[in-house]
Amino acid sequence: MENLKFCEHCGNKINNDAVICPKCGYQVEELKTTKPNNNPQIIINNSNTNTNTVNAAGPSKKCDKWIALILCIFFGCLGVHKFYEGKAGLGILYILTFGLFGIGILIDIIIILCKPNPYYV
Image (cartoon, rainbow, N blue to C red; front, top):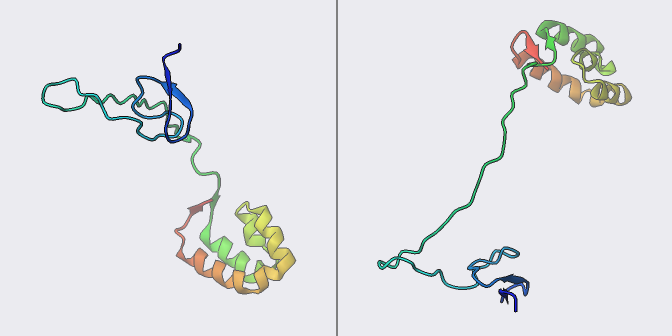
């Protein structure tokens, strides 16, 4: 017969020597001690295969704070300041809702004033 047993928690077939079920993660039996001082031998088989990448291109667009502010004040209901930042979807939303009913324009004025000059989008 194969060297298998059943997990008492999920019922899947697992290796007879398994202490933790690989399917459900529950402990199926006590750890076997191999040293006389009763410390269990624990082997951790974790390996990190992640690779970190850096976007060498940097920020995509450099915008001037004061130009964006002037566009927002005079043409905010048309979303021109959003098109200037390269956010065409929000620009169209501002056109359809007249600057998010004016509330979006007021919020954008405050946000633009708090940004450094130049800022990157």
